[in-house]
Length: 205
Ligand code: Z5A
Image (cartoon, rainbow, N blue to C red; front, side, top):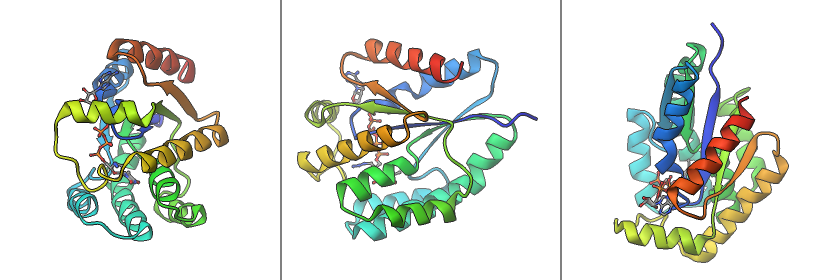
């Protein structure tokens, strides 16, 4: 059995990544592979409880990172690894790059901490490809406002925070240039989708 590919989507809130999950799933299926869509935090019943805690109860950056990795460790073991081993392709909405961007970039947590947690929670596992949806935080914020959903504790952190998160993502994209594909997420849905499809074809040719 050939192991499946592990694809992750990243970006600041409102970048629009989740809007492309079904499209990506269809692209993978068109190539004849099973495609499973997952998300973090909250990809398992255990993780769903952690998600509720971490998104609604403000705490330190370290505590946030530890919860994200407890969620991730359970998710990798119960869902991601078995799916990949069965040959399915996994499309995961957020993974460890989010912790580097939000807890390190956004809140100043030392990157060494996250590197250690990665080694514990998913030794030997990294995404094959990551699509990073990049957008100006002000535009992302407008999209979230139009959506008219109540902001959780994370989303209320303000523009400067999201500028730091975006910069941390861009730094990771420079450091992991062969894995992380930058998608310009400005423009309408169709335009972004076309950019994503081009990058998908190039990355997974
Ligand atoms: N977090 C963390 O801190 N550390 C970690 O390790 C992990 C996560 C894993 C999870 O939030 C929070 O946890 C997240 C990071 C943190 N937030 N913060 N702050 P979540 O799971 O609730 O949400 P999210 O992942 O941030 O997704 P989102 O808010 O849904 O954003 P999105 O996926 O980028 O966007 P979207 O849902 O596809 O689109 C947002 C709106 O824009 C929606 O109304 C769309 O219809 C609209 N949209 C999308 N594309 C377009 C275009 N092209 N034009 C116009 N409008 C558009």
